Each structure stands twice: as structure tokens, then as C-alpha cells.
Image (cartoon, rainbow, N blue to C red; front, top):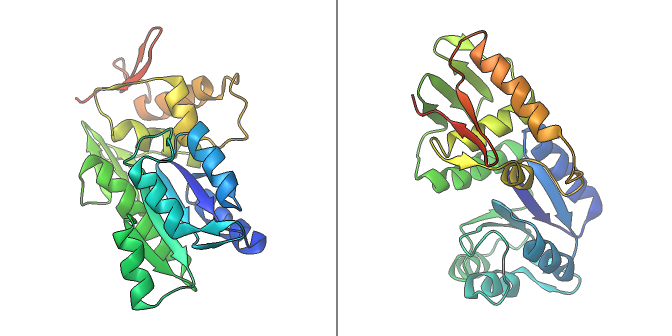
Length: 229
């Protein structure tokens, strides 16, 4: 999943980004409202982590602009927003949620809690309540970062895990290489790279382990589809 972290304190932003990347997420950074606007209108994100006190504006106004459609968000107006701020008063928390935030985390916070809240928000896309995704013989535990086909554990790299997670939230649907590139890799990826094809290829081999019927089907000219059975 691809996240946008809006934070003007560079050291803190880099520390949070590192924790999220190690958990398997693709993370872009924006230090200002202007930079956030630019990235939201160009790139498609699954979740926005939003600081409230920014050099050129505030997160409350930015969140309202997203929810009202004033900002033409590339990923759609249903972008999930997690406010991440030192402003922990009751009035601020109520205002943040009323302005359209899906969750509100007060600094300082534990990285494990932040990751749990991120996972919970991202599960809403599939209306799931469990950290374990299932599709046919495949199981994927988003909290423990473990995956299995039947009883066989899958030794996946972080990026392979992220690709499988994205496909498992859309079983039976064709997902294009461009969509995977947008949601699993960050903005530094070369759009003309073959990394999607290579990653899907290694993921498929690990899942299938010699099986004749692949769990991931290539739909020529369109992308990839995870078989539901």
C-alpha cells in the first residue's frame, strides 16, 4: 500500500518513514501544504498521515479541502486520513474527526500502535475486521507479515508481501501493472521499469512451488488477477 506522510520535522518524518517502509509500505513525504496538494493531485494514495501544524497552513483546512472535493485527489475522495499531531486536546481531536479524519494519533506515540492503526484503516477498503486476509488457499497476516498457501509458509520479501496483499484485497479483479506501481512503490520508482513484472514473477513462483495452475493469472494486455479458488 502507498502512503503519503505530511510532516515538516525532517528527522521525525524520516524516522516514521523508515518504520513504515520496514513494515512493507511505500511512503512518500511532503513537508508543506503546497507539496501535499501537488502529490495528492498527481499520485494515488491509500492513506494520508497528516500533521496539523505546517509551515504554510494547517492540517484541519487541508483535510476539509480533501473531503469537500476542493482538492482533486488522484485516488478519489475516499482517501483515508490519519491525523498525526502533538495537539492532543479534546477540542482538537473532535475538530479533526469532524473535519473528516478517520483516526487521530497524538504525539509522542509508539510505532507499533501507529502501524496497528494504519493496518486497521487500510482494512476498511475490503470491509474486513481481521488482520488475516484469505483468498482460496492463500492466507496473509498483515499484522505479523506472514503468508501461507495451505499449510506451507511463503518466504516473501517485503515488496512481494505488499504485492500479494494488494492482490488479495481484490480477488478475481484484474489489477494493471500501473496500478501496482502506484500503490506498492513510492514516487522514486522509474515508471518504465520492469520491476512489477519481475516481482510478480518471483511471487508467483514462491506461491505455486511447481503447481500447474498458478494462483496469479496474467491477463494479457491488462494485468494480473488473483484466482479466487
